[in-house]
Amino acid sequence: NILPTKCTKFDVRKRRVEGDIKTEQATQHRVHRVKKMQQSLDKALSRVAMVAVGVMGGASAINSCIYDIDGGKRAIMFNRFPNPLTGETSGIQKYVIKEGTHFKLPYFQDPKVFDVRTRPRAIPTVTGTKDLQMVNITLRLLSRPNMDKLPIIYQQLGLDYDERILPSIANEVLKSVVAQYDAEELLKKREQVSLEVRKQLTQRAQDFNIDLEDISITHLTFGKEFASAIERKQVAQQEAERQKFVVMKAEQERKASVIRAEGEAEAAKMISEALRKGPALLELRRLEAARDITATLAKSKNIVFVPGGGGGGGGGSF
Image 1 (spheres, one colour):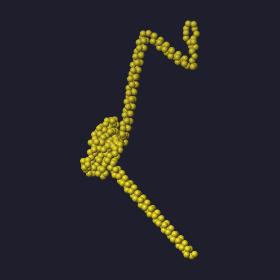
Image 2 (cartoon, rainbow, N blue to C red; image 1 turned 135 degrees about the horizontal axis):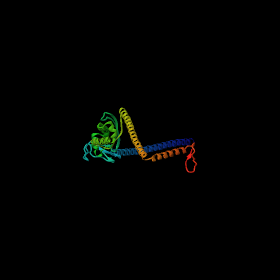
Image 3 (cartoon, rainbow, N blue to C red; image 1 turned 45 degrees about the vertical axis):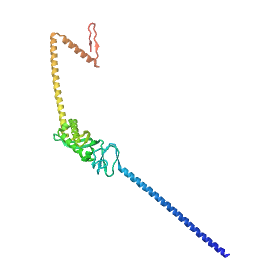
Image 4 (spheres, one colour; image 1 turned 90 degrees about the vertical axis):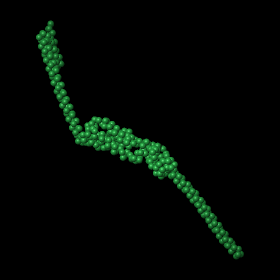
């Protein structure tokens, strides 16, 4: 009876050990499977990363091979080395590239973009007139580059051509034109001065392949001394005009007195002639005087007109 019991306990232990071994083997198998799946996932992620890097590299390469020119702009191409495929030489090319998307060779080609839209610019200057008066003038320009001459403009002036040229030639032309006029003529002949400035400045700008679409003088002022002199001159002119009016008024009054005296003399002469011919004029004057007196008295509230009695004679009393 004792031997079977021992065998049973041994079998139980054996089964337990076998169970633990199987459990461990299953665990190791699962770990192996997990590791294998992880390795597969890592390989897949590596492939995805490589594909992504390749796509990004391709996109970057494509992006470096194209460039855009927006509306209102033009470009010229700068080659660092000669291009044997197209036969282009190194340096700035002679053609102008229009708006749109274009291709280039990275590093070997570099496009230079110009803004060819009309741009406003105000240029102030201080200069002297013919009579040595200082004047402040502001000139407004609307300018743009000559699109056919962009390669020459870039080679000679660069992208900031307007900053280099317009202020200098505008000051030069303004000083030369203003020096031909007096200060008073600048005010009276402003349109003529503006036309002369426009003509000369347009010619000077064309020498640098710059087109000026509009030129106008927007501000023109003089110093305080000249303004005071103009004010005093206007006051003197107004006083002279007033004195001139007084003289003209006195002259007209003198002429009126002469005409009045001549009329009175003529009237006296006519009256004397009429008296020599008879008393009819005196009777007429008496009747006119009586009529005027009667009209005046009739308007008074303190006077009452009473018709006179009598058979044959008319008349009345007051």
